[in-house]
Length: 344
Image (cartoon, rainbow, N blue to C red; front, side):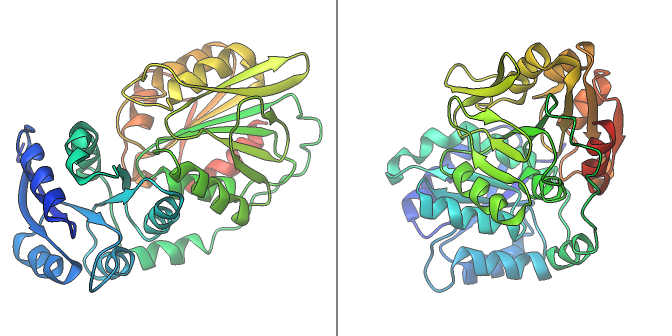
């Protein structure tokens, strides 16, 4: 296979240098150019035709969000946002994801420490290179035509749980699923592969868009109808049960499938504590996280759904789960919310 061609866009010369040097050590990745601002980046994209662009948000002459929106409208490419690990950086990165970026990566406070991100950045570049990217204005037009799902006949489902896992492309996929759930939906627990601070901004954004409550999970939070809990970045999320009450545990620990939070960890605990009372959903993302855990859920009697290839940004995690025999139904993204309700 040919190397993945990467353009690095960052106003810091040190960051551009270190990223170029570190990625140069990775097999299958070639840095074809760098740019200090979006104007230079625009010309280099046309000339060099990279497969993936890494993009800083706060830059001179034109901010990264404005540039990204123009790029996704006129010359769509897989874009990885590299943003500072702050609440402000998280909110801006979230806006970038809504504008078409496929991945987000935390930039350390010290420029000289960006070399520590080498493996994370390389993994995200490989995921982004496989992403299905469309002109973003078209996607928004299609999405606006989809109706919310019907939620009647759910009043007797308080003992049920919906567990969802996602990665690359998952922020927008989750928005399309959660925003269609009625307030009567059983408790929802979610793992989306994101760094710290970004999950807080993500949950807050979803809370303003959804009929249900959406919040970043805290240790001991109750899982109850009309609420979705998002795993905080860098922490695993586990479902627990005490009598008739479901709640979550938020804890650190080793990475699983190179991830923390891990979908496998969530699904394993859901299989153990909810069993046949659960519905599991695996959405777009690269890798195999969630496949093993979903197998356990199905063996425990849970119903399971996988996003189909045509609607995935990256058909990796759903594919692995499907091939493992974990997926009961594989369907397009726009039908998943209604199918969850049907299964409940």
